[in-house]
Length: 112
Image (cartoon, rainbow, N blue to C red; front, side, top):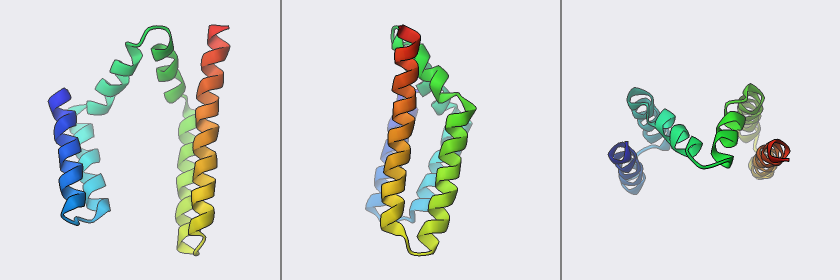
């Protein structure tokens, strides 16, 4: 899978370097990731880390985290359309900080 990930990174770089629309690049990358199961491989590699890896994989698979992130993207889309782009940056930063805090809290809670 390393060559697949290297090809994906090259695809992203070439696409952005030559000015291809970001949505097209993202769509192609998502299609290739789903076809090749590259995301599953990456999660499996993270799961190989001793002690912390399986905990990170468990947290990443919690539906609440996925739901929180999805709602954040929907709210961001609506807010950007209405002209609140600076507020969206602040909001997304807080959302990422919250998700990272959940992950760290879950890991410390399971280790204790």
